[in-house]
Length: 277
Image (tube, rainbow, N blue to C red; front, top):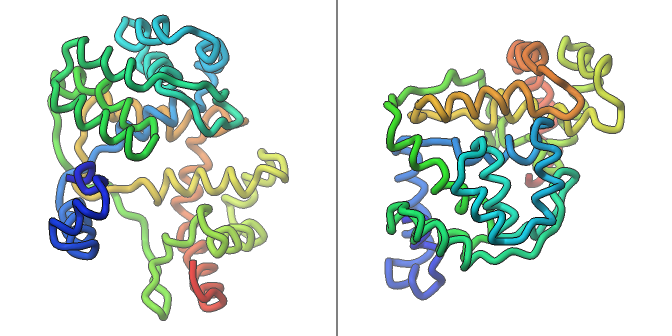
């Protein structure tokens, strides 16, 4: 339904208009079960040091080579990198090189590889509308998801704060100007998390490092998460192994969970300074 809603203003108008479609999708997604396996697979393939060589090598491989890898027997993160480069890297990062892709050939290859046609149709249209690699990663997870037993459970939700204007504290994260201001102030406070970061992370990277840690503690938390072995392992590896310059983030994640109330205090203090986030 979310992909269908990307069909354009005429499509949404026929379904009742922008607000009707948006509010229905938000309500439906809030109620339904959720899985972040594709997000975690993206983060793992992009950032984990074990795949640094593949990230460089695959950027120069031909599309047929990449497509053979993505449906082959390599590790799941390596196959994710292959389909990512095959569909194209349009926004290069410190980890990924730019590469012009061939998305039609990539999704045709997946379709011919025996994946469910409806799944490939949703992934193909999702990629066409957004250009985001998440859509292309979804089919790679399907075989394991189809084979493994899943349960549904709520994540442990950290304590929350709400501003006088009703804005949840977790809106103030690294992805907004106001949130970054709060994180900078938090780093200046006397907290165990701040001390750990000061001792282990170069000054120029501390804010982004804190933002990544906070996202794992707070931002990616779900109610009604679908729990299955492959997804659990992907989440574990991203949580603990994908923070640049930190081989094992177990300690700092635990410290951030303990210091979340201190961060919420900063958010409450600074929240009134911002007209919007």
